[in-house]
Image 1 (cartoon, rainbow, N blue to C red):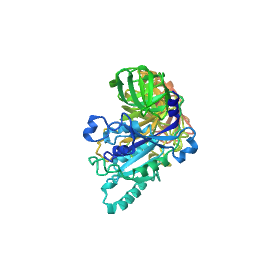
Image 2 (cartoon, rainbow, N blue to C red):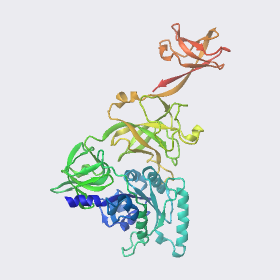
Image 3 (cartoon, helix red, strand yellow):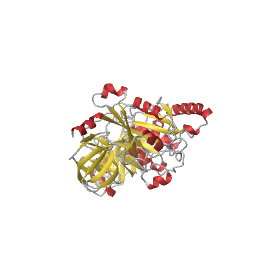
Image 4 (cartoon, one colour):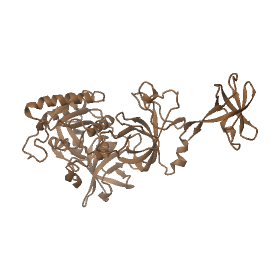
Length: 534
């Protein structure tokens, strides 16, 4: 067992997401970089082979000596660095899978076809990267397709264009490198050496940092593949998103509502006794039917919640065209699931402090069931406010079409995935964090009444008569059976400009008495404003 623990402490795992437009050559690049392919790598999916497109998250890895820039911070614990390449699909309709992969990556490699440049999907990958990752490297692939005498000038031109595209993102000034991962294209013989790949490995080494890995807390592992080994059990391969895992631990598979015991753990075919956040592992547990869990999550028993609805913080994605409307349906990616949900937006009451969000902390005003919120017909942008240009702080109630299983405070992305995949438009609509979840199937009766959202409504009535300079009798606002106690103290505006408040009923026919603030100037009609809780 000692050599197992030894291996565990010697190799630092660093997850690199390989994203990009369909056919930009991501899989060829991953193949060129890799020495060991793990079980899920390089598309076993028959549909994918047919189309020549990566359909599921492929994983492969290669190991290098610990780079100089990591020796000071990690030299005592590690002597080698393993790059795990998460090859995310680029096919437009498979954006759900990309989002699933993007939640586990430490560095993003954005692969761009040097001939075609930035395409719609490339931009969507860039957005997902911005939401989930701190660092990026851009790879201009297929340089072998450029005529040799114009190659360098074409690369320089595309590099300049990419820097321009990235200047308003968090990846401003990120490195751009040119390669030919598979000279001659997918059908060419493997005798052709990839160009620029050894330089890319050096660049990746320079970009690495010591990721914050925390073994504490509940286990959460994203499973991307599952199969049986006769006589041993069922193996799940995936990446540990949080917590740690050891032999003999009990783990829950929430989708199947079963708990299983861990029999053995491997990291890229080497046995280990434990693994922690950020590690890519194969976990053998007591037997169950692997067909029941091709993808999903595994966790510490009882740690995940199954939600019927949720409250999230919400921020619109700038590239999304069109309004975000209350009652509209969006594809919601939460944890490792994508599900349709009906959305209702709400914010702080107009004029309240903190109604504009801080760029540094989008959760500056914590959500609180004790406070009142203002109903919104749609997401309000900073431009609509005529304010500083920053969007006011807002939240959304999501009502899922089917229950979802996820950890608290996880990233939430709302998309319109039913938009035409060939339309040149961004389909990612908003992002946020899950703040509160409703676990009761009858949440509309048990949970929603705690949510205090109000609408401003207006009604108009007439002045019946004036009794003195400060009192007016009004009619035609209430039915005679209305309980006027509910409306006492609400504000009334006369058509002549005076304001007053409802003092109570007058007689039995729904008339009411208004106390004017300041001296009354003239008779006339009036409008009554009041707030109604929904």
